[in-house]
Amino acid sequence: MPYLVLQKGESKASVFPLTKRTTTIGRGDTSDIVLEDKNISRIHAQVIRLDRDLTSLVDLGSSNGSYVNDLPINRIFLMDGDEIKMGETILLFREGESETDHLEPAQRRVRIEKRALLAAHPMGQPTEIFTKPVEDQGESLKNAHLQLRTIYKLITDLNTIKDLTNIYQRVGQVLLVSLGMDRIVFFSYDRIQGRFNPELSMINPAINIKSFDETYPVHQQALYCIEKERFPYLFTEEDMDDDTSSSSVKPMIMGIPILFERDLLGMMYMDNPHTRKPFDKINLDFVSSIANHIGVIQRNLNQYRTMEEKNASLEKVIQENLVIVCRDPKMMEIMDILNHLAETDANVLIRGESGAGKELIARAIHYYSNRRSAPLVCINCASLPETLIESELFGYERGAFTGAISRKPGKFETANGGTVFLDEIGDISLSAQAKILRILQEGELQRVGGVKTLKVDLRIIAATNKNLEEAIKNREFREDLYYRLRVVEIDIPPLRERPEDIPLLAEYFLRTLRAKTSSPVQRISPETKKILLDYRWPGNVRELRNVMERAIVFARGEEILPEHLPSELSKREDRKKEDDEIAPVSLAEMEERHIRKILGMTSGNKFRAAEILGISRSTLYEKLKQYGIGTS
Image (cartoon, rainbow, N blue to C red; front, side):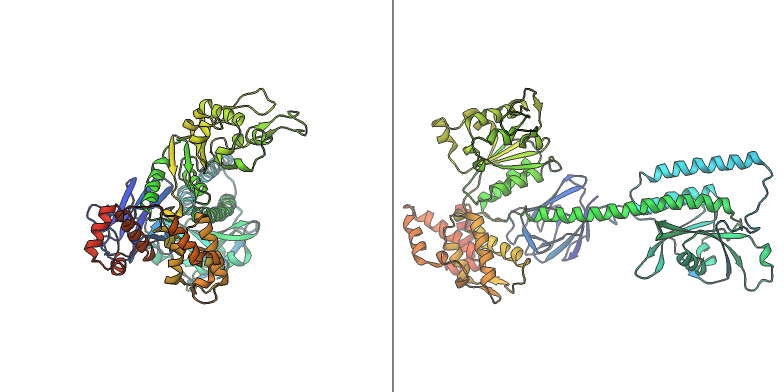
């Protein structure tokens, strides 16, 4: 079960298990997790568990925003170890079971020392220690049969366990009982330090000695021998104060290296200091066969863990590319729609100007949905020639047309089980529209030149910057397809209509783009922010990102100044032209626009905004409520 750990800040608890599907965070008493921080909104954010292995953090339009690993976020998948900052409070997201939910079994303390002289006997050495006359052949065959059954069952179980500690526990349980040993200790090998580190120590449940590990420490010499020789060994112990002949001493210590192609991964240490039961070569062979299999499993687990880490890094990149930074009330409504779309397969029509972020919204819908493990196929309909649209979308059979020398699946067939994003859907031909309609209605398609009907399971997300209603009137777009696509409609406002987001986006692009360069830039000057706010942004968010990237390249100090911006942004004529183009509006509308612009300049700081506007904070709050400007 995932949980949050309080790293910095004040709260009645320090560990917060995320037991509910949706957990709210804030300083208000109605929040599930209450944080005593004046910089946190009453209901600041919420954590959503989409399924057992996937958790999302959503900012609920807070005043000061939410940050994950120092990046401002609106919604993001959380990964183990992510640092969440809200106000002055820092939380750490952890996966697995919290300390309050589950207590790990106490690990036995392993004491290692040199307390006696040891004689080492490698496997296969022809000494009298291993020569034992077989009095009962039937009993010998019975023991061999039981050992083979034990190995078979143990290896079968180990192939289903994905955690190394659980593997050690399972092997330890089996060997303690099957061989009647007193103790078994598993060690991992640290290549850098050149030493064994104890991982798990187990004693036979029949032994009731609380001070067993203190009374019988592990022999340091046995560990040294296994590290140097890397062969299975039996060891006989000879007390330094005892005059007993070494020939009468039996081996009661066994050391088995865990190897993979002579690469030392760890070792198994077994002994019988309490029962004084000796080991023999059969025991050595039996445990060695198990150790060999553990070596293979451990190597595979290491490779699997490495692949998981690489996948986690790729997931991190995907998540960073899905960050939607906003504070505008209209955009917050869109974020709320995305929360609902994550649980459905409804088709979506996204409207908005070029560069407003239509593809980003489409990607977010896919990666937060149940189809995230299936493909997302993005198709720019405007870039496909009229003659190739159908063959690209639906595929074709061999010989369907000149040059079709082999069968080729189309984009829809490739995306089966996932999502298809049709960008600029208004530019697609009527014949292709008819085939897309059939996919939406029947879940079927036919390749060009083919007669076989193929079943596909798809979610369609379409986007356009055209007026589809006008296209329907002009018979350029099918009305039935329009309503099939428009199950849920998302209209992204242009950047010029959400001034609160301009400085927020600029700061975000500064952080993310600066991380990829050695630029010393740390901040954006107030004069530069004012220019960014006054500009009309015909290219929307995409243009703002390009402007910030250019500014970072040209800036030489710690601050982005007006001279680092493209010339078209700082020309007063452009801003005057923008003002001239504003249609006549009421005084109240002008006041609302001005308040929004000042809030954008101050990055949402209401105290500073009230100072600039020359009004009290209480008056500002009344204005915000009057005009419906979003507040926490």
